[in-house]
Image (cartoon, rainbow, N blue to C red; front, side):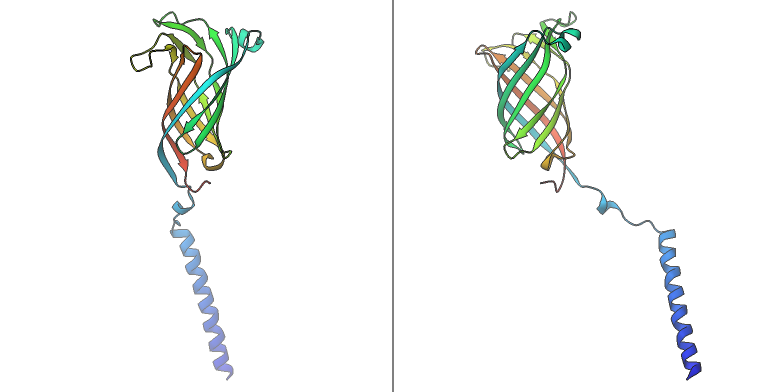
Length: 197
């Protein structure tokens, strides 16, 4: 009986040691697949169309004047955007800089800024607008009552809710009509992290 017990204990110890060696061998010689741990992303078309009104003009905004602009402008907008539904956005930027002498039709320049595109459910898409040039007149694609327009690259810098971690590069087509309403269209593609709600 003692011999049988010794053989049994030896077999159990041998099995445990062999199992440990196999586990160590797995970690030394194999790389586990970590793809499932990486967030999945999806790129989708995006478009926002907003209508705005100038809410305020500050002719004494010292920070704008120091940068070579005459005025701080705040524009309140509302509209619709794909993947967001009804949205609002407030532009707050320095404007009225000298026209670009190298661009025919340049009316004045404005400073880049950031703004939050806010959905009705509270989700936010963070946007960054480059410096730009306002052009006098209109293009053939614009309505007849347009008297100035600008086009600016727009970067997506993340967001909240389903837009957390979002990225993308958009284009803008913006203009002012003779009733002094501002019109804003952002379009392109954005990349979203799947599973964000």
